[in-house]
Image (cartoon, rainbow, N blue to C red):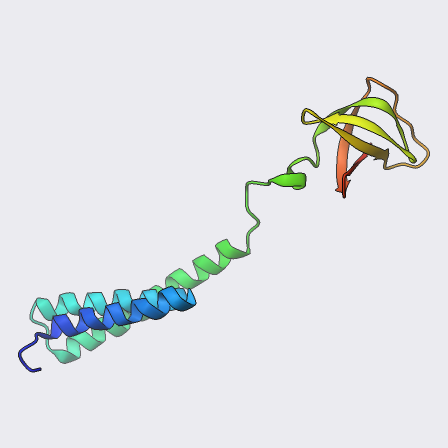
Length: 143
């Protein structure tokens, strides 16, 4: 066992930290693995055990302190790309059949949708352009 260089043990440790990273999807294990790789580099350059451990701790803590807040900020933001019915909100449509609070038909994004007016006292006639404010099931709410 003493014939194996310290840098090899650090790489084994980095690989071992990569396993829970994949299994649990916790990025902290990846940051610790990068710290172990940095310690392997310091061992390969001839650093003693104290230097290797200090490199491991400093790199791991620095990554956790810097990367975790950035990752948390990005994960809390809404995605820029909206899809599905969310992408239809705010679009314009053309009335195909009179739309009022009871219902009607519109052409939205090349498809025929059932629709109803947001304002119960308002009606939209054939050919008028309306804005889609919401989608409830298969019905577009327009104004």
